[in-house]
Length: 387
Image (cartoon, rainbow, N blue to C red; front, top):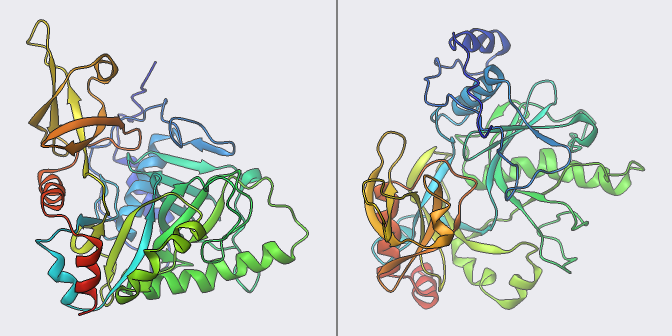
C-alpha cells in the first residue's frame, strides 16, 4: 500500500488537544482545515532514502498539531509549508537592491526543512510536503544553552545537505565529520521561546549563533561524550552586507564552503520574517538555466500520447501550462511533481521532486522566466551593489 488515509473521523479533536498543550504566552491558533488529509507511508526523509535515527510520524492528530503550531509560529499558513519564499532576481527587479540595505548568504543544494524542538526537548522536522519526522531519543542532536540547559521551544529554517567530498574546512564554524547529513541553518523563526519574526535576518541569525551554535560547538570540543550517535550535524550560514557579495564570488570561497551551492539569497537588512512569497527577498543564480516544478500529467483522452502536460498551481488550482515530449523515463511519473529547466525556449526534464507535493504557481513561474530572459550577470550585479 502506497498511502494510508490517516484522517480521523472527527478531525476537529486534535485542535482541542493543541490548545491544552499551548502554555504561557504562546500563540493561540485557529482550527486546521482539511487540506492535509493523508500521510504517505512511503515518504522518505532524504532523496528517497531513510536516515538512521529519523522516522516518519504517522499519528495524524499529532502531525496536524505540529503543522498548525509551526504555521502559527511563522505567522503563516497551517495547510502549506510555512516559510518565506524568494523571487528570482532579474534585470526587471534588480533595482530593489538599491532601495535599501541588503545582506547576502549562499543557498546550498538540498531539501528545505523546519527543525522544531518542542517544550519537552523532542526534535521534529517538517519537510516541504508537510510530512513530519521525529528524531529518536538515542540519536538526538545535542543542543544546550551556555547555562547547560537543553534548548527547547525553537523553530529553525534550513536545508539538509551533504558536504562535498574530501572537504575538511568549516563553514562559519561548522562541525567536522562528513559522513552524516548536515542541517544548515539559514534562518530562524523562534529560539528558546522567543519569537524572532520581528527581528531582521542578521539579528535572527546572531541570536541563534549565541544561544545555540556557540554553546554547542564549545560542548562538542570540550565534552567527553561522543556525537557518533547524533542523527545529523548542525551548521549555520554567515550573512554579509550586500556590497561584500564579491567575497562570495571567488574560487577561494567556493573551495572553503563545505556544501554544493545552488544560489545566493539577498535579504532586506531591516525587515522581519515574512512568511510566503516575499518580493523583497531575491534569489540570484549565475549562469544556470531557470528550473521550475510542475505536476506531470499524461493525457488519458489520447490513445497513444506523444506529449505529457505540465501543470502549474497549488491545491485545487492546477492548470495546464505547457507540454513536454513523452519519454520512457517520464512515462513512469504520471501525477508526480517534476523539475524541468527552460532551455532554448522549451522545457527539459531534470528529475522527480520527492520533496514537493505541489507545482510552482504562475507568479513564481513568470518570475523565473523573466530571470531567464533577462538574466543578471555578475558584472551587472556587482555594479548595482556598488551603489
